[in-house]
Length: 381
Image (tube, rainbow, N blue to C red; front, side):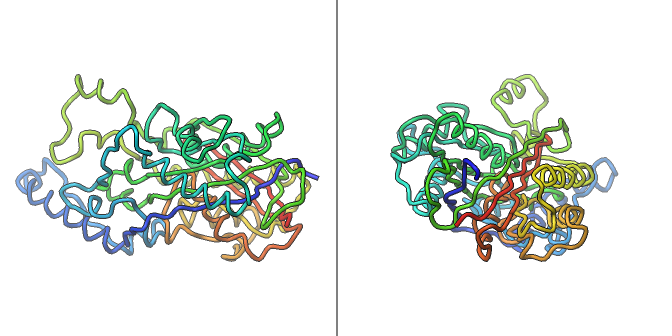
């Protein structure tokens, strides 16, 4: 019998969404205006013309069809191309905490627990709104949870790292941990970059991890084992941080047509990432299963990080030795896009139905760092 389980999950989805067609229309209008402004330089060969995009290119490259966002108008404005998220007073709940609280309340209802039943809060995500006070402590305060809270960032693998950390805290004496993954990815995305402007969306997820010392309730899953891995790589990078202001005061001015920190936003070497990540993650899953005495064919469901459809298909193919069905490896990427740390948890939250007691599933999260984590689960109730 295992000593911890997932008792509930929650999901906050922003009410606004952007289709590929809408995103492409905005991007192509930006490209047209930019090329018109630089027509002389382009004709002289001093500047390379920007290329338009297409909905077909986006779907073929990623499998993404749309994404949920906090602010649609700001992103689609060709002269702005970044979300408008107004600053809030220090006394008001922050945007990131508000999203996390919404997801947390659903997870708490599903697990049938109250604030006083929770001992700690972990906010595990890629894109924290600030350095301090910790967003987790704000979430803890908003929910009325006693105990402690702290933030952690391991990029897209943050949820897997957060679950293992919660398991460790419970083994050290805590009863129950709330782990949340609020992601405002669109604020860190360069919407003027043809190769990446379509990748991310906004969302928040939540997971209740508890001590397995009583009968399971609802759709509970025993945590059989967790495993983490990091390998340093610059192939996915985001340099936006508190030192940027100091750099800007002495560095070269930005292109006036771009935002001041465009060069600090998300960037990646997509093909290199694909080549690196697929073997690392597939081998990690296989070894983790083997160490637990679980055959790949015995796994009923793989809840993978939702970064790229082809990447996920390759990973599961290497694990199973064949193509997986959508039931075996569900996809939420088409509707949500890449939501960083929240992606694998969205897949688990929305696609864990149909499993019976004793069925095995694997949560697998991976991303920048490189970072990767696997969580082997067994349906308990």
